[in-house]
Length: 125
Image (cartoon, rainbow, N blue to C red; front, side, top):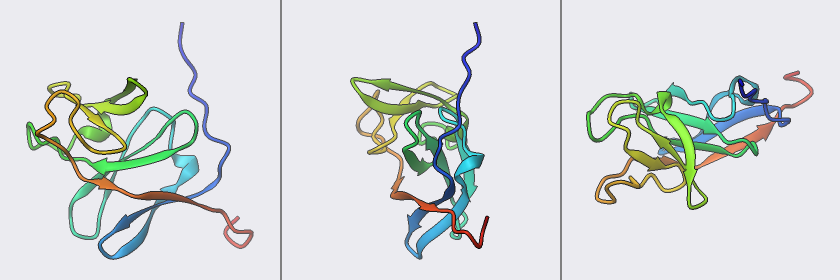
């Protein structure tokens, strides 16, 4: 049986806060709950952006601290004890999407970015 992932009802733009302020990264309609998207930030680093099944956005650093590869956006999402996480596609360590802490090795973590969804304006429609 194949599970169908529905897109959130919210339409607008996903933004994340960087050291330069809020940065528009993509239309919320481009995100599929449970799947990540990599975005390039102005400083040359990458963020992994996720939308959970309720439509809540998350953004963490895309670089896996165990391997150095920018792959977290390609990881599998899930939850443990009510905490949403992404598991690295390489070595399977799980990173809390809200805090960036590695659930399997709390001494390791990835950056977390504050996110917001801004509504689509009539002029942009």
